Amino acid sequence: MIGRIRGQLVEISDNTVLLDVGGVGYEVEVTVGALSQLPQLQKQDHPVELYTHFVVREDAQLLYGFASRDERDLFRALIRITGVGPKLALSLISSVSLVELSACVQGGDAAVLTRVPGVGRKTAERLLVELKDKLPALSAQEIALARRADGQAAGEAEDALVALGYRPAEAARMIAGVKDASASTEDMVRAALRLAARHAEGAA
Image (spheres, helix red, strand yellow):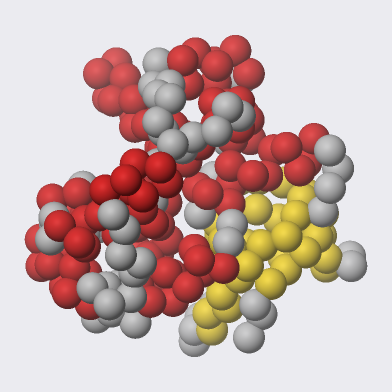
């Protein structure tokens, strides 16, 4: 099992990064949370360190990367649930923060989960049941505090969009359109990408 990886960032393509570890290039599929940390590390020429989960299939060997041990633990809990594979688990973690997921489970709110691509009503209800004892119980105040971004969140969100291929000025405009003092970096990146997708659909 490969539990952690540390190396120089070579390139970013969508949600996949290529890390040079001792001359060997590792392709790692990462969450939005992990992706949002990469531009600043690349700018400072610092090595990237990710918690990882290694999946071996008959036709492939896949490495998934996470910003924290908590993200990886959640991923591992998700893939143990019937009907949830690695791709869907990664999508869930990238679309719904740990705090939001905890709030959904505590409140029995399946609607938020069904907005994640690939999650139907039955899967959402199964997630609520299976995750009930696997997520931290949060008070309303704790949820509000956890969702509060620090002063660098907007800048980090812009950097994440630039890493995805957007021009700096374009990234700044996108984040300005969704900026929220209570939103995390990940929340702003997700909101900006959703807004861009809606604009693209409207222009089509």
